[in-house]
Length: 157
Image (cartoon, rainbow, N blue to C red; front, side):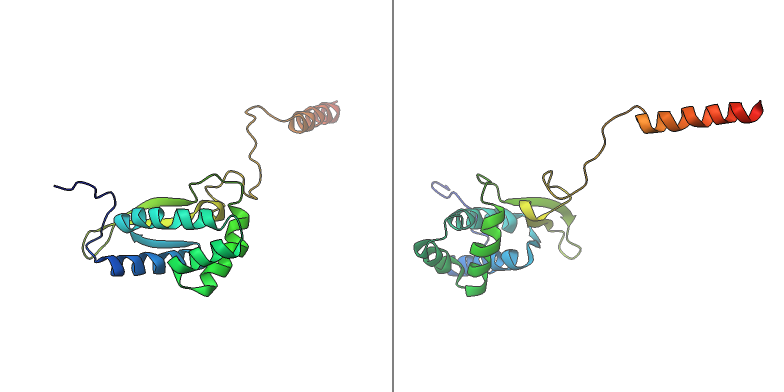
């Protein structure tokens, strides 16, 4: 029976699993997106999102707690300086998992894990130009056609 087993052990001992998730989180912080298997991606989300929440308040205590998990000074610095500024107004859900299909060699389901605020394609509040939603012609186009048709009539006369 599997009573009380709430998370995926990923077929690894505790120390190996914690080290792997810490390394994956550091890579995610550095590159802003990584490719991995779906099971590891879901485990990474459970590991990384509380750490990102801690980075929202930049105190010495929170930095030490995050450093105890990640054990990488560069990743902690980047997390508290750059990433925490971008996710400051987001109440959770900092990571996005996009399924990519199966891996060539062993047919393992693959996924891409990325920060929600660092992707301009999916981010509706990004710096992307606003799309026009009008279906009819614009007034400028109508005026140009009206002027064009009146000049044609004058040239015919």
